[in-house]
Length: 339
Image (tube, rainbow, N blue to C red; front, side):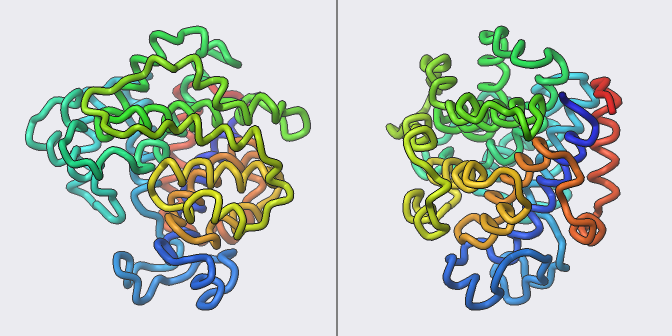
């Protein structure tokens, strides 16, 4: 079921969600509603503490680093951590718009010559808990699905565990970050290989069950006792079709960049209504880390429905949209993804 349209949809969704949420990052649901109403169009973020003066439709680090990951996969025909680290260091020199502290700190180490297996290790207890790994992991889900087909990549569990753990630990050396990478990769894989009419939602929501396979994950320097997959159990236990935006916000800490909140927050919005572009507007309007949450949800919606789900004006008005589509096209050619 994986098609070029789904791959283009995934990449466009990453950038469109990012650009929709960019002007209101760190604002609350109520503040967004009062100042802008519904985030269903691109807005110039005048007065924003980070993005002031940026044009409407501009995307940030969520898209930038997703493209870095994709470019490395294309160039190496797979996951090559030496190349991945080099490209992250180059990206920091080009633009660090919106970069989180853990990513910036680790990539600065890479630029100083510290090996990627060590760069994410830190004594700072505030580092390694953000959503900076999950936000850029979608292209890896697409690569694994294209390479192995269906769920065959899950049968390569030792290789998968090793590679994705290395990918996460480069910037976020915590079990939670590794789990977040697996979760987004698993989610993207399921959506790319399913039609909207036939997807098994019970299987998709059973991310904690998939997590049980990975229960032996431990990262050096991990000081965080929370388990992301325990938190994701709520995706199975609760009926989100009956939850309001405010209720989802309150369940998951306002959707902050703390991945323990951010990832289940984003998945809850997606599972509430996975078939409508309105879901993307909902999560971009819900407060917290709006650009990253909307970017991850945009990737999910695009992977399930393909590029057709996005309004033409959001595609046309997206900053550097030609670059997004070029990466998507080269990705499909490299990994022989059919129409």
